[in-house]
Image 1 (cartoon, rainbow, N blue to C red):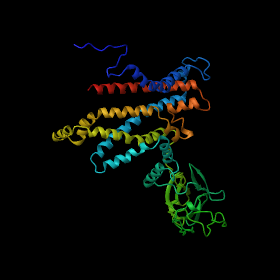
Image 2 (tube, rainbow, N blue to C red):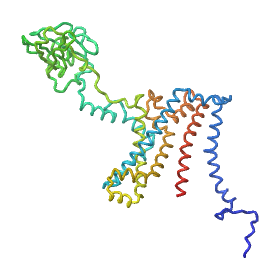
Image 3 (cartoon, rainbow, N blue to C red):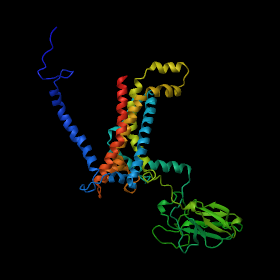
Image 4 (cartoon, rainbow, N blue to C red):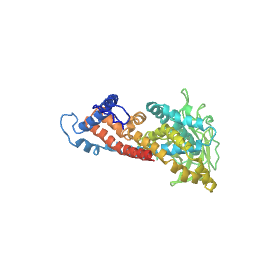
Length: 440
């Protein structure tokens, strides 16, 4: 039996590599890891126990401040919303897209289109969606769609800024309405002049205003824009180039009750029945309220869901590609056996496909959860200054507390430590899952 070779004090690893050589190769990576990861974490923890100047020991005061400051509490709440909604929606959409595109002819092209947003930086995506959520429907795509859908089912006001002048026979009636200063009588011409409407905003089919045909048993009149383009004309009189207020709603009111109503024609003329004799004429508020101008996507109530929508637009494609890869590796014989046994497609999807894809879904979900915990770019770019506090998240608050106009590195470091503590459980779950997968 051959004796083992002498060690000579130079031990080798199980792979036959001298430990000194292994340390030599690992040392640069360890130094970088220490300089870029370990040291910043350690210094952040150390700095979080000192005050704003860094000279006085503050113990846990900075951590207490996190839960006292309303702005930081809003950031914590928003982070919770992000962690729950963004990964869940992205993963669910990715699963749906992966399953649906598996059976269509142009599935690869569809996947490419959905994955393309991943090639865009968060900064560029933020700029894109800042424009998408623009309040002006002529610039913002989201509000252009919202206004189009609204106007398709609801009638918009015709003259939102119209109003009478003091010399006109109309006065404010409360609630945005205008009423005649005196009651009207049958057989008389009733004039309802208004101003405040730009001629360019008038209906395209409005005609030159004309006096109404008077009938002894009816109340007739004209509603018109008492403004002559280019100047001229007399106030409170129908002039040659003034347009009728087509579609203006007119109500006859007696003792607080509407007894008759009508709308002005293209030339502004209108006719009411004899019921209107002795009544006040009222122009209801529906003629004048501001038209629907879209949804305030970046207002305090919707800014967080709107930004989450932009995140889902970017990351749903990523989730779809990973899930589609897992879907391609599923044993087809199990799916076919279920169909042979009489299971419909929904049952196959719910009881076989989803359970088999559980490891892949867990990978996608955990990856996105870690990603959204440090979301910063989209919130910083999309949320306007007026609602940035309402859309605030911990990573953004970390930046504002550390480098803002009133920087407090103690609080900023405490927020950084809090973020680390929030990420650690997710990372531990991921490590346990990976080890469990490796043992299979």
